[in-house]
Length: 288
Ligand SMILES: [Zn+2]
Image 1 (tube, protein in one colour):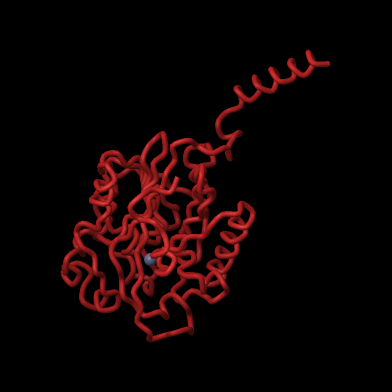
Image 2 (spheres, rainbow, N blue to C red):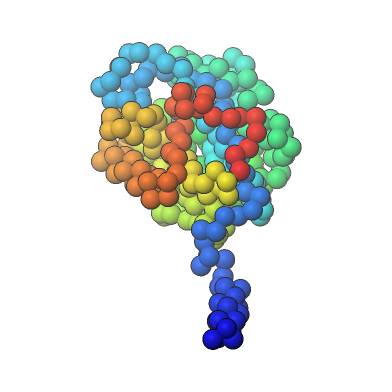
């Protein structure tokens, strides 16, 4: 009997060794860590975030970005406001109307390249940049990463290059007008970036045509769902329709999708523009 068990154990061990990485997805990846940082603050009308609730009330929000170190390379999720917007440069870059509406208070040191340096990485270390979407506060610094592979939904690229007229204000073409020859991974739906289940891009269209969120499974912290702008605040999570959406129905379905995955994996849902949650997190050390 014991010999049978031994034979079985060897067989199982052999079988596991032969199974490719993607089939074993879900096992924690040692050394995976994640930093949450912010591209300064925006001050905006809360009605942008919560439709019909607190319209006209001005609030300050962070602009979350993530630096993720994986054994196979550094990955970013979003790049924040363009560096040109830093230190009072907004009107000359976004134009007065947008600057009056969003009032960015970004210093040059808060731009993603310097945030990378703070933690010992360089721009050249970045292998993949995943974009929630191409709005001005998320894709502003794509041109700092000419060597990286840029992970975007194909629908988002098309929307960014030729937005609907009513969406045009939030897409700043000069953020990415010199990226036609960059390497893009054009997705249509979900994608497991390294095939090991640790960093998975999730289709969460609604805020824009090609919005995507990211699920990160950290060895100690567990599952984090980085919502991007799919869920701005806890009020959206609780059912308040987001103020700015390309499609409200898709937006509400994406919120449900993220909550379902969060619940299934006992994870956490992190917002891009939720100030209270952001301030409750650590920003000088990684989550592991
Ligand atoms: Zn945003």
